[in-house]
Amino acid sequence: MLAGEETAASTLDGIPILGSLGAARRAEVARLCRWRRYHPQEQIIDRQSETREVLFIVQGAVRIVIYSVSGRELTLDDLPAGNFFGEMAAIDGYPRSASVMAVSETVVAGLTGEQFCRLLAEEPDFNATVMRRLVQIVRSATERIIDLSTLGANNRVHAELLRQALQAGVGADGTAELRPIPVHGEMASRVSTTRETVARVMNDLARKNVVKRGRDSLIILDVQHLRDMVEGVRGE
Ligand code: CMP
Image (tube, rainbow, N blue to C red; front, side):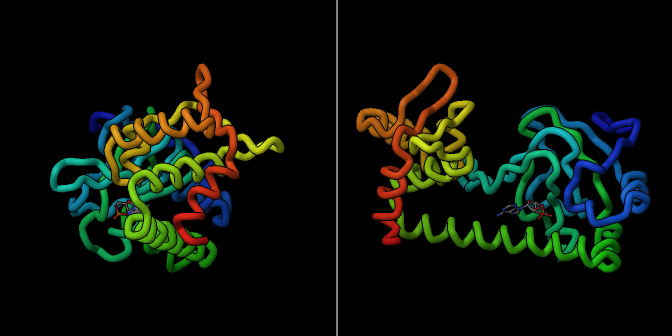
């Protein structure tokens, strides 16, 4: 048995994309999978490698990343449990388009590319969900291109903070609370800038009373003001 390999296959019932399969088919897929456990920061997929497995995140979370020539890490997406990744190489047969690493203690169930493509051909609802995920990737990549070509680094940090505030939920008083406090290096990786730039922008926002640092959270005091700042430069 390989290091990190799980002995007992558990259930795939918590994976929404497999929800349209009947319970029996899902159990069959679970038996076909190779189950593995990864520690935080451990690499699951190496960009450009020639593997084809598609992985369902049963427990934990992963980060999709690419590295620039200078070694800077760019985050493409963060996926919590219930999601899947690795479908691109399974579909087109080309090398992996990005690297993937575990963010926390993570268990994945891997289906061979062939088995995944068979499911695509046999299960129309499953097929439609995979297509929606691919469309979502294209949409967010388009938004990123727009932000990179139209916004300066400061505004990209504002836009990322706004995205996180909206995801966390805005209260009736117009504030949002981000818990845990966003890590500057991770924000920098998401918007293609440096940690120093993120630190400078956050200090500036704190001075202007747009954000306030709590003991274990970051409070966006005025989400609307942040939205105006972002939409103003985006011309929306
Ligand atoms: P694959 O290319 O097989 O291996 C890396 C995986 O990362 C890829 O399949 C997708 O599942 C995922 N991925 C690649 N690019 C992006 C992106 N821009 N946004 C989200 N996920 C991505």
